[in-house]
Image (cartoon, rainbow over all chains, first blue to last red; front, side, top):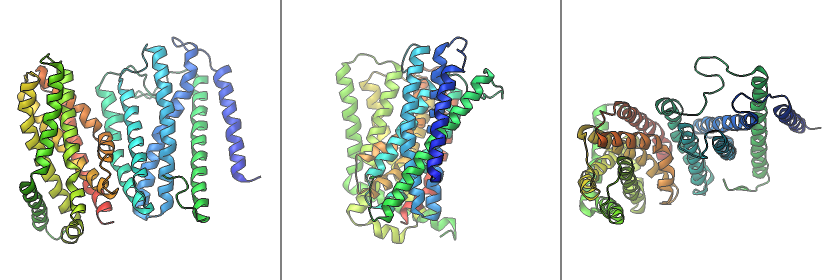
Length: 224
Length: 225
């Protein structure tokens, strides 16, 4: 069996294991009850949408430094996947907000931040559709990706501290303390790891498809 | 290129003067921006027929008008050079940084002038009362600077896409959003007169500095290509 198939099989098995753990191992949380299970979906996808954004920016920088087109493919694939994960995080967050705060959307600082992230992904992907020449597109979108990434410190560090938020602090909060049941922490870590693995394999798959397309002489197989 | 600072400043100033002279001859940018702002303000003012707006609504409206006026006028920075075929000459004679800062200074000035024109209209038409003029003015100046700085780089990006004008606001707004939030919140506080919005203004200063630095670092990547 090929190595990628093994990886995929392992990821699928682990995903199944985590899903099982979320429903059978995790105890209902105080105050949240059964709703807490949604957090095991929400936190990993939100983490991946931020990770994908950072990776996309790093690969953009790599592209500008080395001018190797493969970095552009990686950056584009990370942005495309990040957009999908970001939508999942926004929707699951809105559902969570409806269940706990009583409204789907109220421009909580966290919601503002994730919304800006969605906008940036959207703008980046739209920009890519607007340029036809491959190298030109790689260059311009790399610059835009880096320009957009400078807003992240302002959004992530300044706005949530300055405006009052209802959103719970990250799991490992500023005090360095973990306010969670041990089982929950382990399952959450596993969920984050599995979600990252899914993202990574999808990324490799997209980049590999691109590479094969290039080899076979098929230009612009998926127009981004 | 970096031999001395004065020749660089001279080059940037030459670009600024060239743009100002072109603008003075045609007056296209200034009239478009101002008319766009007036139309938007008048539409809202007519629609609400003199009813008072809350300070939050009024502040957001001011920044929406400013942002979209800027979007209507500033896209031309590089598109117009491309259309008239002067982009190549500019690339040959001016260094990238000189062109960037010349254009940016021109855009900042243009926005300042437009702001000076529409703020009195805004106050009259929408019945707005400003309680803290100093923070209000500071917020406007800082906001305009940020908008112009980002718009100069994104205008070059748009010129590279083959002048797809609709892309301009789409790619500029996400980058400007943090500034936009701070500007609206500073404006609300200066309209209400509840003390100077120090945090917001500081945030805007930091943002402007970071954006100008980023534009300067990234500009050459597209300019030389």
